[in-house]
Length: 507
Image (cartoon, rainbow, N blue to C red; front, side, top):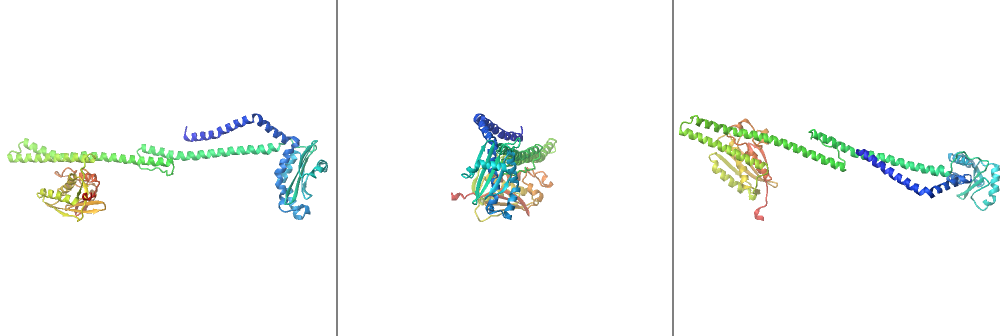
């Protein structure tokens, strides 16, 4: 069963069950006394020539009779032209005509008078004589009476408004026939009004039920439909969409959670695709970087086997070349292992808070001992401020040496100059290393930290290294919660930001 059908069914039960229970209880209560009481009241209105029905009708219409008096017309002083017009208007009014019809249907004639002057009267002389014979003595003592005797029923009601007396008299005799099939006042008005009231309540409840069912189902089915469409789009592999449902309700929260799940799934798919591309590039890079030394080793080994190296000097040179290429392969495997550990977060960091510039001086001094043969000159431009940072000394040394090595590797001349600068920016110590080489193509700058990336054909020649140096630099810097950027400043310039730590002397 759908939610809409369940709502309709539940709302119907909310109406039907209380109604059935109410009818059952009412039936039990009225089984004995109730039905007899209703029958007694109904008979009372039917008995005595419909006397009580006629009396009830007179009371129901008395406001219409009193209007001329309320407007200030004093019929006791005689009828003026204005009073006569008011009297005529009252006689022609729909309410008075309805009263006359109601009393006529019950078999009554009646008159209305004030101050002794009558402005409506359809009682015959015989009926008036009969009425006077019954009530003359009684009216001297009372302004109103209701009586029945020998088939004749009389109703006289007097009302006082603004000190003016308004008298209504009605009579029923055997000569006046009631309309056949006429209902009592109780049945005609009370019962009828009660039935209309109950039916009206039921109609309102049913309409409200239909409206609430439509409104609630609409607020449920629309977001459900959006969620259904969204799930089908995800199933079809479409993840670049957004659920358009922003209402601040439970379904709004659900749709927001669904959208966040879609975004997370999209990120996961993109991450998986990036990983697939990375794995493909990794395998391609490994194949490329292993092929060159293997080809070289194979060539020198064949030269030895074929007797091309026929002198001790040549053989020594061939053996030395094979050793160098084997070392290159060992370095590649070592770099690859290091990069894999860094990429997977398996590398352990031994952080210590050090003064960054003192640390850099030591690293540069050690490097310059070995850099003489490489003809590398390092210029330092350090800030006067103390820069304390949390670093793993060995891994940060590898970052610096990899950058130096990259600069030497791609220099265009026999010598190179590397400038090392320090500074501070917000909560970071800044290290900038710039070489005097050819720089990097602008399109390649954003890729140089990717593994096995070589920006141009000139960087694919044998002996260029593993292609993992700058990738390892990026992984280590990010492992220090730092960031880095590459740009061209004459040559290639790499800027590294490392977060500050507290001065150990302050502890």
